[in-house]
Image (cartoon, helix red, strand yellow):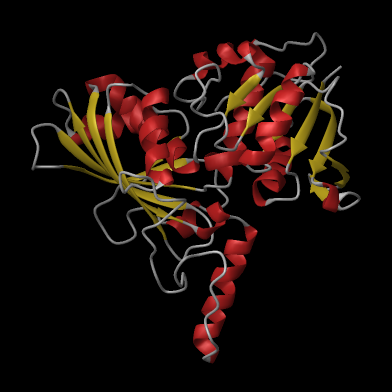
Length: 349
């Protein structure tokens, strides 16, 4: 007997990726429920190459008997329904920002802090970090183990898919409008996104940083090390899928670029493409649809005693969201929710 799984927010970008990845990785599920808002009742979503699931209403969905629920319906919706699912005995893996900084909810990236999953029993909720945080900490964990990170300065180049399907449509529509000389319509973004970069993701906070920048700070310290200083500038760019990051890292002790390169090559979930030549690095287009975190442009920062620069790229819908959630579910199955007749052992790679 396998597991009963619900995907909440199944009609959105991330929800569809969750369903796709559950199928791709042969997750040991006997039953998968596609769950979304009432307006999506009866809609159909794909599960794998040959299965179609009818969408059920979240408002009336009974989580009793469901083993794992992968949530991506928006923070306000998760705030209401994730605790309801947890109280019914279902373990929630929540992709929204709602529970990430809750002291009783583990914030997990399987390649970085898998042991933290054990804390889920306090509320039956596990938080999936922000997409930009996930790819950065996957790349930095093997380096932190070698030399202890003192400070991170990161600038992100984040695709519009991180803001949802409407944002992707807006980039497409605005791009077309530029070419046919139609008026540019702004709905999802504060400024034109086509052929532009917008240094503004999420709301502004009192100190001048945006909430996205704040997330990268507090989440990195919760996952990796509370003593690391983090400062971020998060920018939305006219790319459909995949986030890129220019990461400057200052270490407490020496770490040369060749040692760092070899450690990254051995790290789970990381692929190093670092050739000092044309095309010797990975860009966002090449990372789209892939599971790995790609690291390129590894080089010394000569302005500090122990510094390195990295270029980090990953598909924000996959490793930055859906894949990370499924990997957490796989570890739950392997180490915490064992059933005698589960179909096959889980993978964490």
